[in-house]
Amino acid sequence: MATMEEFEKLDIRLGRVVEAADFPEARKPAFRLRIDFGEELGIKKSSAQLVALYTKEELQGKLVLAVVNFPPRQIGPFMSEVLTLGVPDAEGEVVLIAPDDKGAVLGGRLF
Image (tube, rainbow, N blue to C red; front, top):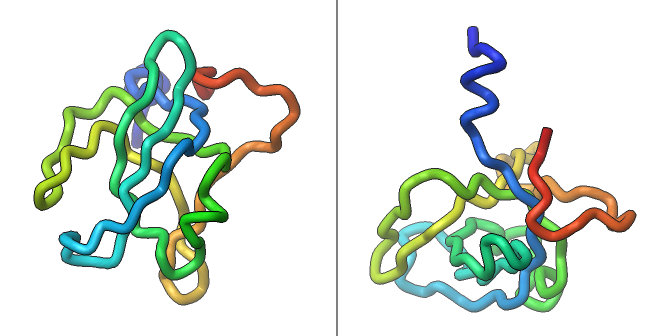
């Protein structure tokens, strides 16, 4: 069982997708994302397997949650800096975890 102290080690922040691009080099279909986490963290890159349920246009401007304190991960020729969070749908495709846009601040930490 995880402890509260272990959970608090995760730095999960709110960001807004500013760019979504095709990632044809990925082994599984994915997009390359650029996500704005506000002044403190700036723009970070992420690879996300979202092509089954989202278009690049739908992702543009979308609020997302991401773990920002994992080490960067090399995915083919792309360095992913954050882990964009999602949950599976009935077919196992990724559905993004996204908060309501009720004035939440970019870079705000999940608690």
